Length: 247
Image (cartoon, rainbow, N blue to C red):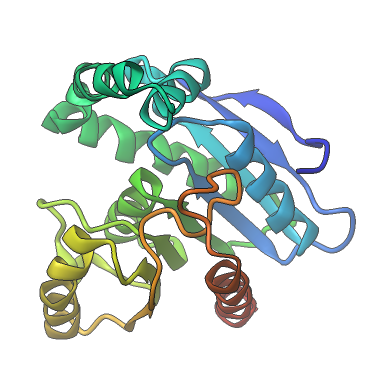
């Protein structure tokens, strides 16, 4: 991972990591964090998109319920530990820290927070109304949620996320390109229903499923999940998608 080059800005009730391209701005992009919070990996992904020409905001909407990057890093360390006792401690700790995410009030707050980020990007003259969203795991789910709730979003590219239960599928006003690992059982089991509901709502939806990969295949800081071939292909596909939809 290269040295991070962005900076932190304040929103109403949360912060965001903002990183800018060095040349022409092709549009604005929201990058939503994994369940581990706004860790350096997500900031690095934001920087990579900025290098492709996008003004990028990676909002920190998990610290709102106590999942700071420090907490997320510790939970991930416990879960991946070689020590069985530490791994056993990870599950109850994760359940405790992540329980607030299942509350409807949190979902409403998170979408309203993400709309603030859209507001901010829309106010940047160089963005010129070209706003897209992508995200990973938790962020993939909220990429779906934001795209369904805000018709200013012109493209959504969720990675291994699922639309929240309350999603109104006819709210999507933009195309959606989703990316999954074949071995991510829960999401793959639910994918046919997502495809059906997207089709019924007339949404331009397309899912890419990578054989032999699981959850978090794009995360190059996770040696247990990362798949370089799938990540490289998904990176090319998502950039082609953004270039087309934000042109």
